[in-house]
Image (cartoon, rainbow, N blue to C red; front, side, top):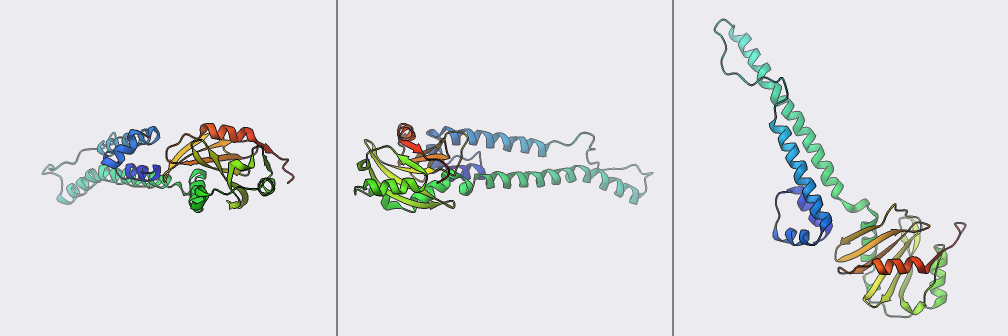
Length: 241
């Protein structure tokens, strides 16, 4: 189960934990924390709906005989509508809040999600075994304003791909743990390191002197070490490229 699927389930009913979600939560502290927050939010909203605002009178079922029938009916209407009216307003707020919460679960605007989608669009890249010539690799890297200080035989796949309106190097590097995908995102700035797990891939996006670097592996591999090696191997050219 991916992060997206888990969080959509949690957003739909934070108190319900089916077996597949429980299995994901057991190994995902981020989604576990998200579930705690959603359960707390749900509890706060429920308590707000159950509490009558200060000063609101409880509904009455009888009136004095001296009060005219029409006057008593008007009074009852005023008393019984004060709380339901507030409850209706709270329900509207709840619906809006819930909609925003679920909408916020959609990862379509996140950099990590876009990286995963891009890599999924080139599934054969993982299995590439051909040797990339130094000239080809240097040409791709230079086009993006970077230079890679590594042996070209470690790079089994190299393409200049369109990503968010810019040409970026898409590389697959052979490591002792298997192939690792690297995207050099000169035009995508991030404030801090971000790790992610989605659709069978694990990855990390790290800040760079110019933009950021995304490193992904299939499965649950820890790519921090590889990301650090890529950081050291990259040389950023001036912005005048």
